[in-house]
Amino acid sequence: MEAQAKRRVLVVANRTAATPRLLEEVRGRQQRGPCEFALLIPDVHDRKQADWTLENALPLLGRAAGGSVEGLIGGDDPFGSVQEAVREGSFDEIIVSTLPKQHSKWLRRDLIARIERLGLPVTAVVPKQKSVYRTIEDSDDVSRGLLGGGGMGGG
Image (tube, rainbow, N blue to C red; front, side, top):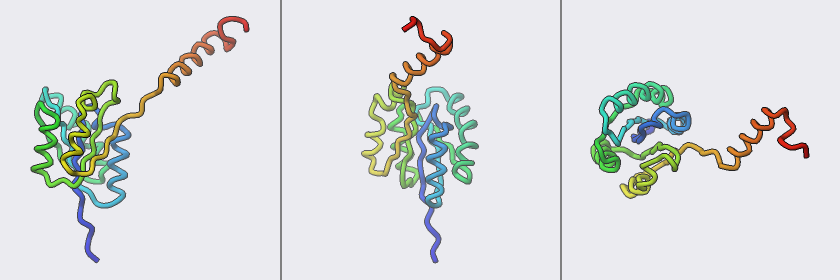
């Protein structure tokens, strides 16, 4: 029986490069079949920051991937960096990990849709956000606890 070919997966991330959701995605991808992973930090304005991210994220991603992960550093333009990595790296798919919508320049610039137009399968990993309702509910619970459980007026 022939061995299954390894899929090459480009992981595009910066500040979310070692988040639990991304690590779970990488682990799950590896469990579905043999993969090789490369982490691209695509939006580099500060080389020291990019090096710090790679230094901290690569060991965690490597554990999730079951092997070493290649580290790549892009340039100022996130899309141009991804485009160049795809052109040069023979990747089969892309995982993009980004901040939640209210904090993500990539989502505001429609980076994921632009990457999808490169023709490879793209998985977006975006952290779940707490809803405003849940936040209000949590603060009400704290207020009730601080006020002795009875609320503010005697109802």
